[in-house]
Image (tube, rainbow, N blue to C red; front, side, top):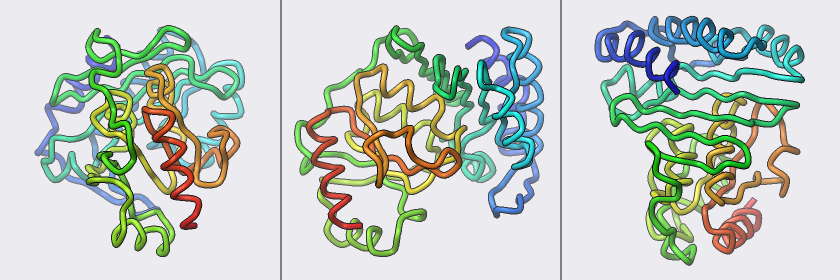
Length: 255
């Protein structure tokens, strides 16, 4: 956590609202701050625990190579999740770091440097926000009363239209930083969560934080979250298990 905070305050916040941006081959944005933060995190994290590291700003070939080398221990880093927000001056982005062992996260930190909120969890030891156990509020007991976090752009047109025209929940948000959306669900700020396709660094820390907060997760096609595609995994999640079952059932009926 100290390493993540230090990198955020030295490499990211001084460049907030000031950096130029470019586009990667997949169309997503990246900046000088992304690259500087990833390099700094690589140095700090491998000093803490020598292990291969997968970072969002690596090439796909480098990511695959590092993942295969990290069967016994692997750092997974998203230096700035929500780069579009960062570039546009929207104060909703985060640094995400996870340590994986045998393909599963055992430690996760998601840090929002603008709000000064650090979400973190260790496998078997609970999840926290700035020292306070998660969740910090009780979730809705029903899907009809839920506040949902839904990213529509990676969903099938049919499902996206169903959600837009006849949503089963009370209200919906999408702020553009998936690592924080996991954490907001774990905290009880969102009641249900849906994303059409995430990379490893999008979910590695957040899924542990939600699990340790007592939440439930799967994908659009798998009850076992870990059985889906490693590099493009959909997310169906909720803090309340009964609401999760209702949410999952509704979504799969619309596929």
